[in-house]
Image 1: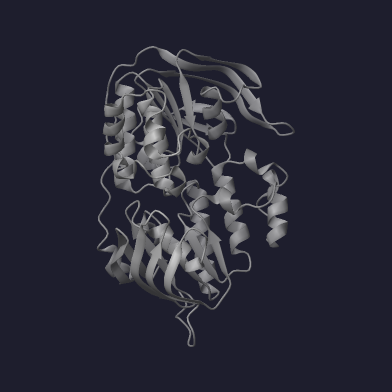
Image 2: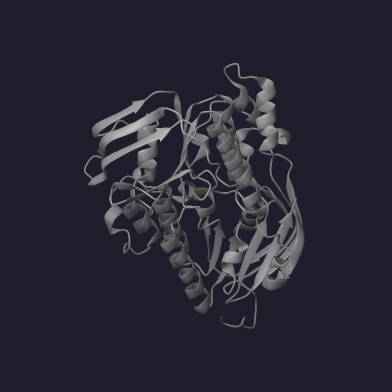
Length: 416
């Protein structure tokens, strides 16, 4: 890694307070980024990482008291990459930013809303970093498969060698060992540690192991795909002859590369899409929780979302408490962090008693502790007779499944 040069840092900040409309504030953070440096911001879900980044960049929704000095062009990748895409197609978006088109040939002229979250994250990253000397990245690998995450790290390291800098929020700060030289660890909006990477990450607790899948007998088939083929208008086949059955009591994990069709498969199994060919037979009410939880909600606040339609309020309170959302019960859903929104959507699906729950990236934006809360709740729903189907790039989440599938080239294979 290049040693910091003389002169002015690329970024210098003295944050007295950075506050959201909800009243939550990050306080007392100071940092500097020099050429060749990467700084990781770590902390539990809801500790203020995204609030800090948005405050530093002067983005709407956060008021800042303090000073921020930016001495080079900065590119920002938000935790929700779809918020950073301006064009209707990848070609339009890349040409708008002046970024090169290579690597996106297979999706260049597809509507953006057809793309997987992984492709959207790669697209937003390419557009944001073109011409930038400072990379400001909020959970940049959350929707990426393993190969794309390796490419991301190489891209950041190349940027550092060329004299740029990176400010990275990540729930897995250990992933940046060897790349980052500085870190800030937040706890409830205040810096627990700020300084060298090795010193601060030593203060970051080791993540707990994921909950173990329970061995149990399966019940009846709740949803089955029979020879399902699917494609979007003008595209090649996304799914090719998929046959699978999901049982009451089962937690099924679907893995595969970005753009392999995992989201499409979940939407078809949940009845959101009709397959181009073949049949889906459902024997119980189903729901689909998308990667963007804001597209799921019916209520305005956390409590309204968990209780609409006459749900048992005592049970709803129990679920919200278990997911750490009870204190936020009266908060508008739009004011929540990405991880809080995801937990609220999953809580709603559970409290409303859906027998088939198809959830896309259930642990995205969650720290390992919050992930375990979600995975344990989904496991208990399965134990009570539901069928859980998750699409995930998170190996911790996949390891909790009773059944695992690999989707690649449009073909689903059940893993041993």
